[in-house]
Image 1 (spheres, one colour):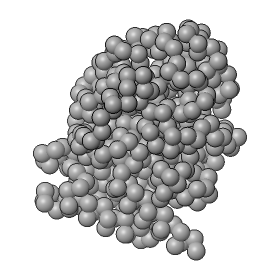
Image 2 (cartoon, rainbow, N blue to C red):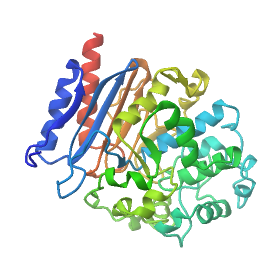
Image 3 (spheres, rainbow, N blue to C red):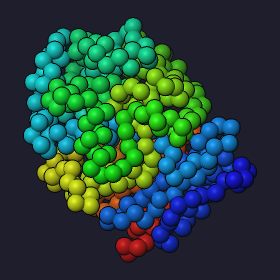
Length: 387
């Protein structure tokens, strides 16, 4: 492959040729290094494309089966796992966390509900210091520390993004009720039945096909100026996460349902079409319509205490807010994304599921200029067909 002109591979329905062209242009300009994009419309895969390189040296092509760390897009996978447990009656989203994890009731957390954690409103958005990145790899240490500490604001009153710890919080609830780790549950209850290339962490046999993460440029913002008691400071320093850690073996082997999902756009679009299409994919039912409805129960709408931007959360997913993401229509839509720009969005009114993952990280937490471009083209094409 010519490194100066990387090709776009895969299939595109004719209605979405503009998307292939935009992706090719971003690869050619080197704005993208490697990425994949997938679109499911009404149960049909209408876009499944990939291209570029999975390494910074541009020597290893991004192949059909390349997978990449998707950062907080992982939170969508974890939310789906919890909703599946709720659908089966194993977890009540309105119950206190301590119903399932009694130790969590300590230090003023007895009334924190499962839905509070799923909507980032629990007040437990990170770990009290001292706590370093490697401590997240130790499940018992990480979860016992969370059980022991006090919330950083009154639970249920506002969102404060649970950047690094949401997967540990929800994963421990899931472990208590199923006897399985989050990794095991996702493999056995989601990835296996749907036959998708999706996992929490990455297995040793998959290391060779993992794309190298390229960290984003630093954000010109002095977070410590907010003061040591700010939830933002506490969250992003408890612990500090270096993007380069995603390229290490300990990171890949850890069970971190907020951070280290490894997958591609094809797998994400198929998986989350379950939400878009009423809970079932090709005869495999993951959720009931009633459980899907719970996603859209607004839990918070405020300037997020951690991210400092207006956010609106349902249960497990964000809901559209034109102040934050103006290119997402205000309709029955739910979504989330990952650090650097990965994103999966479910447009239920349109029967549309879109996923985008990449390895060259852009600035910011929610989406990027690239994801905005791709989504605008996709929505334009779908609206044109429907008109």
